[in-house]
Image (cartoon, rainbow, N blue to C red; front, top):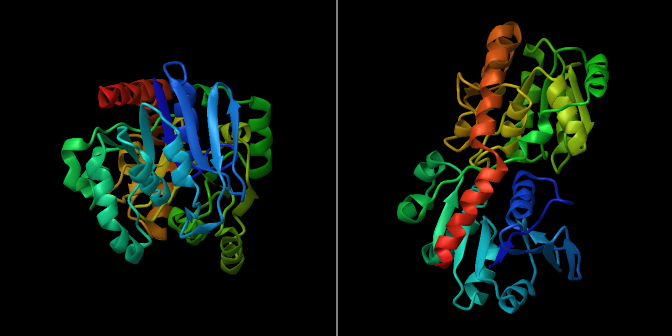
Length: 366
């Protein structure tokens, strides 16, 4: 069996929740099938490489418009490959159009990561094509039932939806380097709040910064992205001395910071945040999460009152109050962290997710 995953980027080198998930997913699925991954190269030229038993095709692009690659050759690469099944990771108009044009009667399933939220005018023009794309899919695989219920697109395709959460390799989060954890805590204190993610508008980092004057411990913000410079200027304007930007960190460093912190914060503000893989990573390290109520899978990833606290988005006082409540109540914080860690092992293991998803692929082919 030959499965072809289609998206715009892959990890490495691109750091992001979807990119990381696809990378983990194909590493598991290569034991059951031949796997090809087609993405854009972020360069003008195209190239191919095989890595760890997986074929990667990087298609040249001219740049990006509204976060979507401009790659005239992408449909031709799709047309020339002949897998048994395409797995299209959505949203990604380039991949969706390319598969519609070039699939040549081959089946495809849609791994539905998020609605398009910000580009409303563009989506009005594109929506007829997008509905056609979803309609012709054998299955649609969203990350949570709550997202299907609240999605303006998926609500029309209940019969096609087969919900499966994202998964992670939780084992790598279980064994920190205790010496490095102690070094981090000696730098920032034995209790601090932690955020790690790409600095994009919908991540709500600006809300976390606004909450800083009401929080009694340091706030460590890791990661990079298009909003970083503006956020750093905002932190200076607020003049709160407990905010620390530390830039991009490696996967190994992430494990140490998650074990060193007291609470992980996930303050996203828009439905672009459909699930929140970072929440599951923090849970793997036994940490409770303060997240937001978006009507998306974020509320499924972080169960309010069980694995953490969910608050209204864009509300710095609610965010600060929830964080401070957990800081002040050690027993509750520890219990939530333990609940979270147990839940990850039973529900978000990438080995389980990858197998269930692969079984859906087989049923689509059959």
